[in-house]
Amino acid sequence: MSSKLVEKIIVANETKRVKAYINSGCRKLNNSIQSLTNFHSCTRGLCNHIRKAKEILDELEGLLGDVTSAIQTTDGKLLAFSGLDFDVGLNDQAIYNDLEEKDALSDSQSPDITHLAMVMAFIYSMVKQDYLMQEKIVSALDLRMSSEELESYCQMWSLRPFINDEIVNGAWEHIH
Image (cartoon, rainbow, N blue to C red; front, side):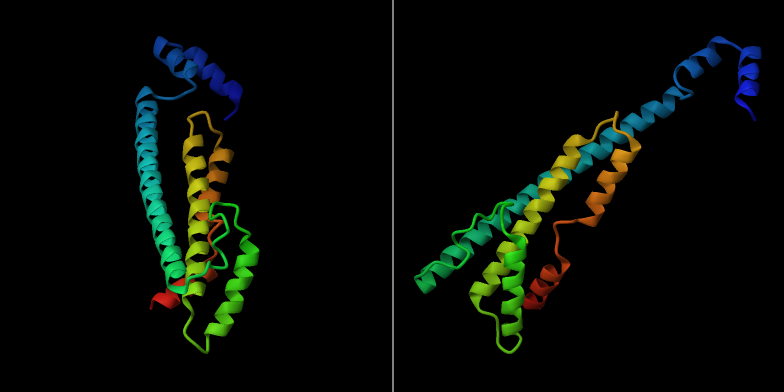
């Protein structure tokens, strides 16, 4: 079917209703209302997810502070990572290399508390970076967003680029 044929059909059957349908971009009002309702419902759910993630992040930060204080009190000395800022500014590769080194040493012996605290600090850093990315994505959601932009946000969300599965799996091994 060609566009000229469609145009002739529209002209031949031109009514107020057909004109309104074409002027609206060939969308039914009910579909637009339903889409808008779904968008707001999904946005509300994502905002709730972000709020819960922030609560978990705050709890992790508190636990990390407790662990750091306990180690400093027990050992009477500062941890190797105590001078670091646990915000997103961690040198991930350097800490990851240090964790791999200590994991190799701890295969033959139980891991020391400093190593476990470093693992905890690294996981906190990963979770915080992931949270910040998700927060930016949710705040950027808009009805005027292109499908390509939305697709890239979906891909970033599902890839979780800040989460290192090897570190997370290693942490689970220490728990089990």
